Structure formats: structure tokens, C-alpha cells
Length: 219
Image (cartoon, rainbow, N blue to C red):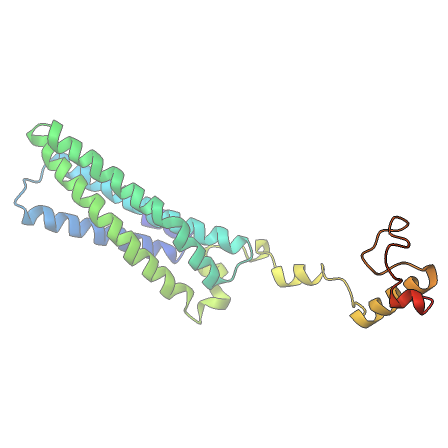
């Protein structure tokens, strides 16, 4: 599994496996501390909760790469991935906890051990993802050495990352004239064509009030 993750996720595979191992060891240690009997159901539950934790870590890495393909900087991509992956991480852990509670309440003596392990795995998986995954991702994305080498380290195709600065420059128009030129042209048209500049409506308001100063000036 680690070799498969390393092939596609590169350096993120270390982060993902570290989170899974931390969550799994914490769950196992707490399970033993409670004095519960470890059996085949507990082993299956430990594997299942580890897969749920791995899902959260992989989801974070996937969002990080997607943000990079949108042309975001490494730091900005890390921020967006952290926001987008929070609830999926929590949801994966909550599902494990809910299933674990059902197994403990409705299952037999063998299934209860699996229920306890699944509940603990979901609980520690949430905290491992929210803390370790995001913390390690933040440290990775803020490392100065990663700013140029991140395509290779994160398994991202550099040629598919758009250059937003270059694209924006191609959309600029101009240069534009100053506002004084525009006002000068408008004044010339008003004087030449006799366009009124007041709020009166002609010919409805002719003779109702005294002519304005522009009319007296012949404008």
C-alpha cells in the first residue's frame, strides 16, 4: 500500500501513512488500556478505521493537487485544500464512530470488541487528520525548498499548471486617455450641437423658468 501511494502521491504518501499509523497506534493503545479483548473483529475494525483515516488524508492531497492545477500558488493551494477537506475528514470519522456504536450495542460479545475499536479509530482518525495532516501540509507548503520543486515532489505535471499572470496580461486593454480629454470632447459636442446640460425636459419646459446661464451665453 505504501509503495502504491508513493508512486502516485510522492512525498504526500509519507504524510498519509504517518497519519494512519498514528491513529492506529493510538486506537490500539487505548483499546488495550480499557482491558478489551483483542479478537478478529477488533482486527477488522482496526483496518476499517485506518482506511477511513487514510481516505481523509488522501482527500486532502487530492484537493491540494487540484488547486495547483487551477494555477494557485503552493501556499494558497494549501489553504484552499485545508478548507475543502475539513468536513470530509470529520464525516469519515463520524461514520466509523456511528457504526462502532451500533456494533457495540446490537452485536454479540465478539462484535463488541470490533465496535469499541471502530469507535476509537474514528475518534483518533478525526484528530489525526485535522491536526497532523493539516499541520504537515502547512509545513510542507511553506518550506522554501518546495516552492520550485513541488511539481516533482507532489506528483504534479508542471506543464498542466496554468500561468495566471501571463494569461491575465493577455487580457489587458489600453492605454486609455485621461478623464480631461473625455470631458473636453463632451464639452465640444454640447456647444456644437446645443445639447442641454440642465435637468429640464425640452420642449415641455420652454418658457416656464428663466433661461440658464449657458443659454444667456449662447451655449
